[in-house]
Image 1 (cartoon, rainbow, N blue to C red):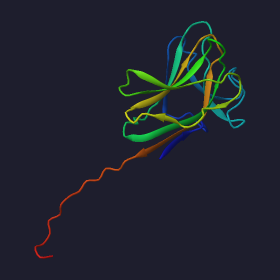
Image 2 (image 1 turned 135 degrees about the vertical axis):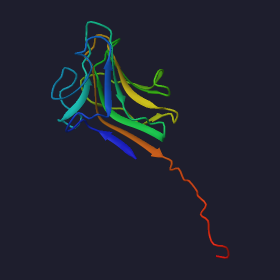
Image 3 (image 1 turned 30 degrees about the vertical axis):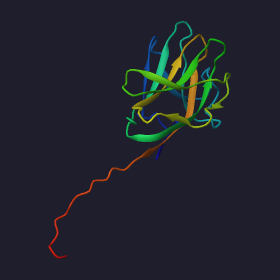
Image 4 (image 1 turned 45 degrees about the vertical axis):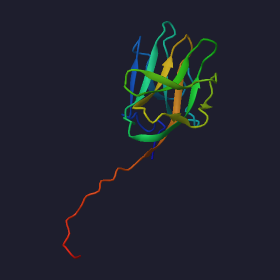
Length: 169
């Protein structure tokens, strides 16, 4: 199966945004110019962004609300903007197995005010329970994501039952 979010036409309940620092600087959904990027990945429309407070070191997390522990072969693909320069804002894709400790599987590497492809599908370990985007402020312009796709497999569970029959049949 798969999950896909291009943040249109409405803000979905599939994600939870958390932050440290100023509440004005967390994940939001918008269209048009934000200071992070001009438009959504496909030339218009909505996208999710974290315009981070440039005066203090903060983070903004965007957690996928679905427990994926029953999913196997999870792969994530998305488009991103990270207005990073040396020692500026950073975007990471992370997973957790216990909802306490988070492990990074991908870090932004392309800078600028244009959309970049996350590259090949990013594998998430089968032991993962949740995934999130983690944005860290370092006096930059923020980060944005769009067209997030999460592919997965679910192994069906079969239960065999014995049915009493008639002797000789």
